[in-house]
Length: 164
Image (tube, rainbow, N blue to C red; front, side):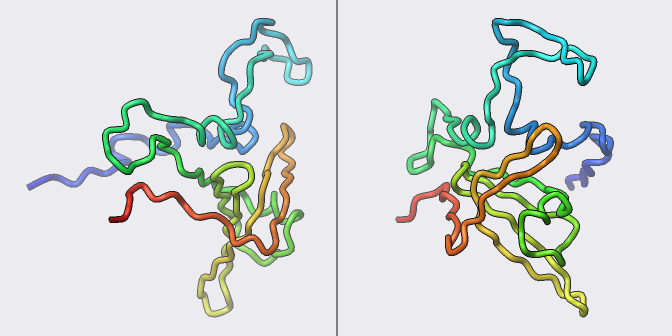
């Protein structure tokens, strides 16, 4: 009989460090640029003048695999990203204010994004709202910007299988 494996027995909680911010995901440092390392006085540490790649809007969504061994399966393994964002950071940008402490941002590229908002009513029932957006970004200071897409039905996830 197989034994039950608990993830906490294998990997200690919080051992992987803090979660990446949207800014970190969108400005991932891929390597040291030809100009080398420079000191940024603001942080008093060595930083790089590196080549930045926007992993959420370009690199991950454009990622391809070379050996696509299953017929009808796309060679693009990443359909979308989903990241939890503290609601307090996006509340100034949307009209909903009575929402759960966290919002989920889903992205299938810069033009195909949404926020999933949750709320609980007085009887404890949970409801969700799908809010189509595009171009969500976060700057170094943590400030978010986005464009609401009212009337946009959103986006469909790609199917990993073909229908016969």
